[in-house]
Image (cartoon, rainbow, N blue to C red):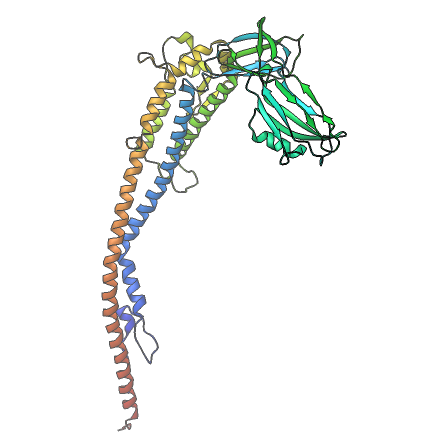
Length: 462
């Protein structure tokens, strides 16, 4: 007699060993849940796409903010376009710096002598020698004299220097060692005749009562001529001779005429224009990359069909063609030597730009900084547009980023809620299929017992 078992495979279930047939509850439940998670996988794909889009939007938005900064640098009436630079025909004699209010022009300067600092220096003494008690009087310029009392607490050359510095008397005291010994040196903190020192009194050694003498360096004012006008100064740094210009006297050369030129900082402006063009090209290239169809069959860029990016691209390209009227022909970027390439990026003709900066600087400045509402300069026109484009709440990319964040949160909430429901379903399935597993295992045991009993019966024959 033959027997046959239940075909569990027909139920779509896998059995364990033949002696203990059952199902893999975990595998069965996972398979069912995988099928149930089909909507969730779609949401996760959408979420990944939104994350990728947000990353590109954030990067381009950062580029947009940088462009706004670079344009502002050119339209700022106190910025680089208004800045002045100072050139010197002999920087070894005199140099200078200028503020934006300095008047452009050329000046002839002759430095007769530099301002010097008054000082006293003592005879050299043994470093361990002590001074007898006494009094010195020190005066800076026409100021009040300071009394220096010498006693056992400050009667060496080093301790006396420390003591004098603590008096804040307008001098710097130090000790200099040379072949004659240690010298006490007093240097006025004020240059020129106004800081000339007067030292009176006597300093004596306790060992033999001998006097320690002081030599003097007299402080004198600087003397120079500016465009033939004699000028004296207690300092080698003059800030009030030429309005908005600071002069630094480096060395005296009575017979040398130094030509000092005050002019717009064309080097700084050229650099600022280059920064603007570079920043603009960066954002245009980033936008172009999103609208470039891959030729190798790879996935399209995240923002290939993004409307906001198209709007931004159109806005930026339109601004580059902006033109004001008049202004002696300096009315557009092209008139400065800044032209647009086929891909929307800009190129600079440095020769043409240099000629404009050299010969029509005020027109260049007006092109970027004119605030006339009827004939606004490019800087203000584009700057105001960029201000709107980068607005934290209304800017075109910031609006899309905010929407992206809302969409991602909605998907996250949807996925979390779905997972909560699946957790309940999973528990129900585990309970259900655990019962099936138990029933199948009980059936297997029963079948095995019946088969065994049948096998023990005596066989019959006819």
